[in-house]
Image 1 (cartoon, rainbow, N blue to C red):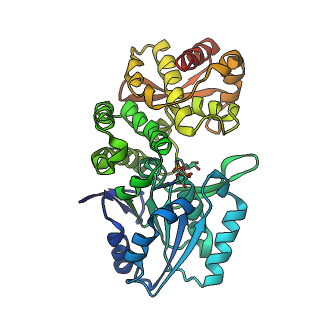
Image 2: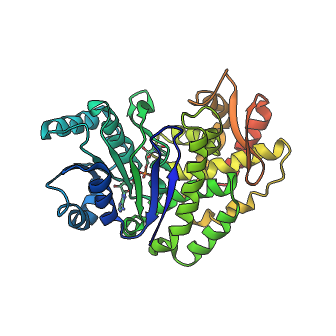
Image 3: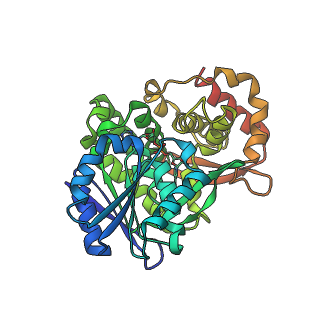
Length: 364
Ligand SMILES: NC(=O)c1ccc[n+]([C@@H]2O[C@H](COP(=O)([O-])OP(=O)(O)OC[C@H]3O[C@@H](n4cnc5c(N)ncnc54)[C@H](O)[C@@H]3O)[C@@H](O)[C@H]2O)c1
């Protein structure tokens, strides 16, 4: 069973996002029918390769004369110039035409890296995204941001490049480690906070029914989450306005990740804690949101911010360094109420400071 959503890119290049189970046959049929190539490049995460290459081969090899596979080492380190260069070399050396498709199979690292390769080779070859982590299914595979990291910061080199289609096949989640489930969970909770609080109740229910071992139970929630991101990015393709709402909790998260040297806390943990900070700032500016709404997910997270307690003074200045800060003001995504986000430049440091105290206290 699968469901399909159209992603509007405000150009001729709209594409479909499909979520369901056993979709690999549909991926290869789509390439055959819509792109019509006899050759296909597959760029795949090593862990995904180890678990799933047989079913991928089964779906692809009978349909294409040539399937050329490049296996990428797992982890953020692969979003590098070196990996980018190696894959570009590989694709060019293997022989590529403007119409040869590249299928990116993996989490956000592979989607961003292989997406940037597809955007760059011959100024753009067809890209198909097959996200395999919860985070990639509900977030990174949608919106057309591709890129790699630079020694001076994350995601500093890249391009907006839309895929021809996204296929979120829930079967991949059968092998996803629990910590990666939790990582993706934070983004779904974020969607619940900024758009549809009902999602939070659904999440609680699925998790209480051993959701992490039953990927097929996630179809509806992945679809609703993807739809929220699709609606937002379709209305703001190049990130000029409302796309900022997707950053709820993230201005705090970026600081937490940074002071944790990008190793002490995962992105998902930092976003989860960051949402407590954003709720606190929202409440100081007039909202009445009970952060208990997040507490029911706390037991799934396993981190502690006690060591940051004495460093709170450092954090507001770091927020000013956020890529999305403007005019030397801290820009926060806040809530008027659940499901009603807005962007506010906050210059009252007492508010920012107090919001940090609350975020940190929630995890000590
Ligand atoms: N382009 C965007 O709009 C966007 C949005 C959010 C995040 N991102 C980027 O996404 C990246 C993070 O993505 P991620 O959280 O998916 O991490 P990831 O790609 O590093 O995957 C996490 C881990 O899960 C493993 N894995 C992936 N799928 C698996 C599966 N089905 N079974 C077993 N193991 C599997 C990987 O090998 C890796 O070890 C970051 O680089 C971030 O910058 C991009």
